[in-house]
Image (tube, rainbow, N blue to C red; front, side, top):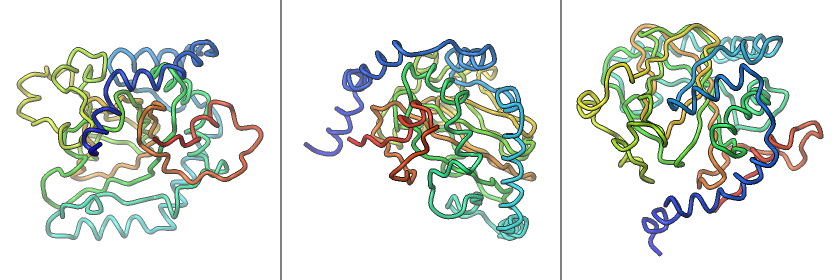
Length: 299
């Protein structure tokens, strides 16, 4: 079987549904009521494919301060101010993500529960919202902690352009702004209702190849009303849950910078591997949902 045919079969709706069916049944038998704050976010996510809240609404207390302290330590340790200055001094932007993205995470992506971002990603509120949307416990596939730096010139490139992720028919990315993000600092943008059950999904049908999921901006302007295009500006602590199988684009910063954490969650049927180094033994206090989320089950 050719790779393209295999991909077509693997991602076909009947196969996707069949592979996820046991997980849907198990979740339906074990799910618990959501808190009011978590339920409100889950409803918005199911309705439009995107939900925006504040991290302090779901995580009151010390965790928010821990996240901020971690970012500050990494910012100073890695000399991010200097790196931003070097990027801005370049005469033109190159066609590489490294021309506008700086990594605040050092080394291998390990499952280190002493790190506040890992605890945030595997927390009850986050996994509850993602599970409610997917209708099953999710897989936590990868994460990023990055700075989107302003560029001197050039056109939006790669994920800065409109696209839809081909990794799963239904998936969730969780974006957390660690600083205030306005229109000049590269806000995340999303076409509301372009997710699987949304009214605009027929305009952007699922395809297993990335190049098939890059709509032309003129097509979007002609077919999608402006009120359904969300530009997610917000203060530090803005928290976004989004089905990125719908159409979206990353930030294109012109003056300010954006500090953002991203967690990636898919259904078990996705062929996207878990790109996190998981230790052989896990802490005994790790929840069953978190254990399932980090267990890799490749095709």
